[in-house]
Image (cartoon, rainbow, N blue to C red; front, side, top):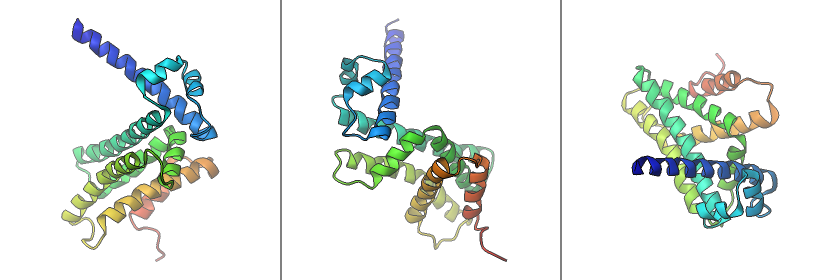
Length: 207
């Protein structure tokens, strides 16, 4: 019974944190970090102000954990896409293609978080800069692993720069998806995925 009670408490706390993440990301995307208050986050999440401080010591810590949470979800979705492709006997290049789609699905589901994440990547002297660099590398490392396996298996050239190529693939998906969200909403996710897939497979040059 005691273990069940602890599990229930943990589940409730995670649900509360998720509500706070969702409230914070929406507000900060709308009006910026400095202009967003803890009172507003609490009100948007439908909880008492004290609940925010029970879960996070400060607004800065909340935002830092929001970055960890969001990029963690993205990283997990990329890893799952690669694992599922491998489980059905697909190639590493097919895994990369599946990861592109997984990234698009994630961004389509969490557009406000993605906008914040990309914006914060280019800002300096933020309290959470070191955390941002760590979680960014965790996401890129998943792609690097698949690229290394592809090179080792002869699917890709040994001449490719794996760290830079992995960063380029992640960046391609982020920027293309944000452009899609902002300016090309008439396109379907299949359409966007197909365009990026052609780039991955090198099918954009003329005959």
